[in-house]
View: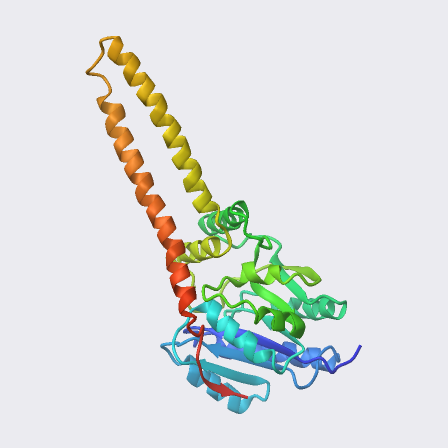
Length: 316
């Protein structure tokens, strides 16, 4: 096994000043351990991507870069969101690395399985997915919503690795192919499986956040789920068509029922059913317009072909 393979760890950061020192300490120990075992090259790096943080995150990255030869930093010109920041790091790292592992800065991803990622890479896998083995440390609400998210995405026809977030290894070859996916509305969990190279899974137990607050509250999680569904599935629009057809059939049945009631001499009944029908159909119409509008909005953004991120500074 050659030690010439360069590993880059890509870590998006948004307001992570509370965790950066500890994260750097633990990752430096891990990288030095891998280097001493000759699993990775001495030229391997830890690449932090600052996604327009409002705190001292970038200043800390600059400081760490000065004092630690393993640390590199990318500063985005403005906040572009986790997925775009991650992509910026991946596209930067692929120019220098043979393999890249993406992870969060908050130490929830178990860094002890990095060794397994690298070994799976040497076994011939271009993509290695980190998959949670259990959710014992999650609250009931977190566990319910997270599992519901994956099940909903699979139901909508989105090709996902169950219980996988963005903790993964990608080879240089797979990253070169990832570059060819040009969509502005990024959902990397759905894009990466489409590359199709040989892949493997490494299970791990996700830790509690070391410090700071979660960057994915319920509102952002719902938005993320909507982005994933509308970026990879047309099933919601097909569902609208199906519902519309069923309502049309129901209207025919209601018309037949009304004629029968008329000949039976019953002309007063039906107030409740009429009101319910009006509200139900009105609500469905608004929902349908909203879903169609979501797709049109995405088409609008894609046709502009704006840059997904702008790098202001790169600390090599």
